[in-house]
Image (cartoon, rainbow, N blue to C red; front, side, top):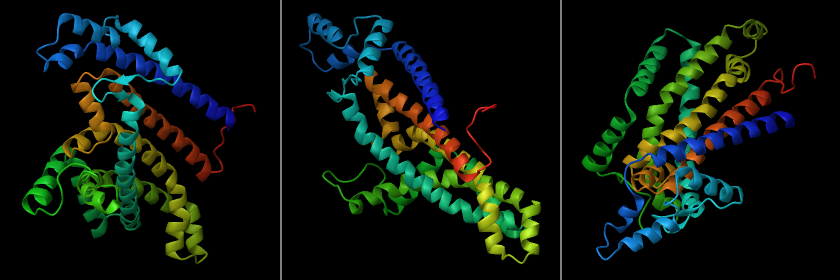
Length: 321
């Protein structure tokens, strides 16, 4: 187990290193000069001022030198300075990361809480009216583009009915859940409606496969109740592919938060990446994209560990040990 974890951590470091290099190259190829954007609103700025700013942010160096300096500083815990927010990058990312984890954690928990009973209900009687209705709802949720669903939610609940706020995190100075909760409803609801269909399909397929196994027929022949057969036996084994998909989907959700957070002006990592790229805030864009990659890698590792925890037949030992 320890060797496996160390191996995966080493692989993750290599992926992060390659990702940081690729993102640096792509950001260097972007059009526009960050210093010109900074000085655009200052008519008194001179060429000497622009040169000093370029030297201060390292923009007078080729990208490979900037990357080398950034990497060396990052290895010592310094991830750079945000030009747009005038503070260290980690101080900018910390609150945004917490907001994104709250948003995606709630969406994931609610989606799984709905998908489990719906998927099991559909799997118990495939081809029945309930299975048909659940499949129809699943396909509708999967087929609707998330940006269109977000617009529909805003128009209906914020504009027409005026029940919920359309964007933001809450009023200025708000710190309690009571003030923040109304602002979570629409983005979380959009993520749940767009994701629950896929999870339900995975649960239905996995449980239906287990219900056809011999050990299920044996349990029923011994007089075990149907509820225990489904929830105690079939679902435990069916949880393996479902856990894998959920762990992988969390990483995908983190990366896909760009659309939801931008549309609902939710101050999370997705909106931070969008704003930093538009504003040529290269340090913030680089570190935020690395956090998104790290979340996907952590999801993969979590899926592997959950596999071993749920199925004792799975081991991390190398062949021959």
